[in-house]
Image 1 (cartoon, rainbow, N blue to C red):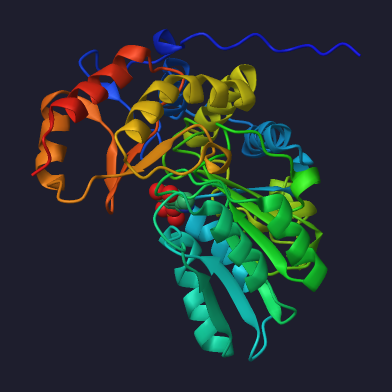
Image 2: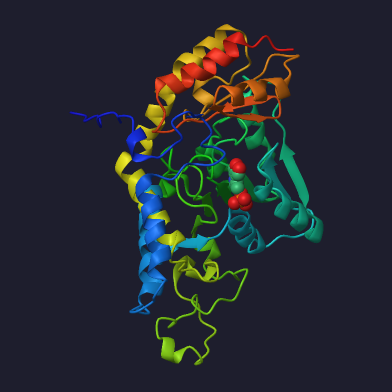
Length: 391
Ligand SMILES: Cc1ncc(COP(=O)(O)O)c(C=O)c1O
């Protein structure tokens, strides 16, 4: 059998307009938009100077392209993709459509991003469910045990398992194949926040079978803020959207017939679209960003980031910083617990003084590069860490 390996990705710095003095290692916070995405956004603003002509089809064509691109990225049919404004909106949409009864369990991981927590707290309260949060069992390396505990927590009375794909604080990998299989075995809804991974690592909806997968556009998709995409599986086919939009109704393409009101939604996930779905600035930007990601390919983006991070990871491990085992890191970002006694404020100041942008989350340093980074960016961070004495 012959196998073909895709050529590795070269640095794409020239496709971006990052500040030349900045070592930007913070994609997990805000992904910079490529030049072409910026240009498409400016074109979107200009287009509305004089909306002549502005055919009604334009309200649909951009959205359909965005659905098709995201569907291709996660191996899902385009009509199962909804256009959303935020992860909280997508997760709330799914959550509000999961039937819950008293005594059932909702399973989360410790320290998930709040957009995948607050709605569950509310629903647990409203329906007298048990919110079962599986805490990290200890400092890294602990992800193997953490994932084991997660599986044990998915009991027959579990109604929902709502997880990230990659933990936002430090890039810990969650074994979605195992958790999903367990969720399906007990009939629980399986809802995934892919905001810290989709775009930078491969995701296959057919293989992992989430009931919903929600991903913001502004981080690893390198798109604009206030955009988000969601896959909704069959479980949600008859659900109730958060808002009753006109454009999400069957026949909405016929602008002359809009007051022939109907209770029927457009097929697939379009019922969950945010109002004013067709945003003529943000949607073209999102499509352009998705086109860049599809061309670069998530597997190659991950390999590029993992390669950049490998020397730093080895060095911090050698210096005794607690870091998750290789097998349990998603590869595109690195989270390392800082040595005890380090003054985070001082470290933040030193990083800023040297133009190094990375996040301090709790007691962890989170380094999240992307295809615009080069070895010299990681070197600048290493220099700060080497010269910083801690207290
Ligand atoms: C895992 C994760 N989900 C979602 C978000 C953003 O959520 P929202 O779109 O609701 O603001 C973030 C932001 O840091 C995140 O890390």
